[in-house]
Image (cartoon, rainbow, N blue to C red):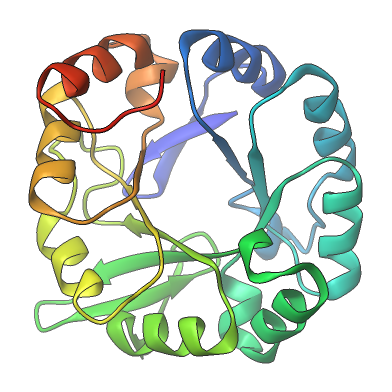
Length: 235
């Protein structure tokens, strides 16, 4: 398990199985495992990881990274994953989204988007953030929804690992043209960041990594604070 800042300077954070079990015990609603170097290294997503996770978890989990075909997705789902996330492969071949949605249902297909602000607009990044495309995020979101994605995992590369808070402007721009559930990702540092994202956007979920890996705050403390602020939360 690794974490970086703006998708760079990755550092080892520990065993994903250990942390997965810990986060479930702390109250996580769902876990997402993204092999961010799988595409660059031509490596398929580890089916073995999905098998091991399914044996220790009772909460849903998503696997992404290196999924380029129906067969890849099927192997991960059969191994125990509840959803698959696609990014680079879907940008290269948008029909992949439709294929997976038709085969497994839209509820099992997460369109993972790495968004980069260029000074004029947000554009799609692929290959673990190493390749900035000429595809506008808003155009790609609409395309993904039409092709059958069931959920959007929206990561701000500009906020990733910075602990400066979620990218509210990005989320607000996407939600205006998207009818799918949106998971906010990138930049969380304090419980107040989670309060802000649920107060100022229509995000249905929020994802964080660094603050939990480093034990800066706990999932339970964030949920408690949100409940006190009348944000609907699952305990």
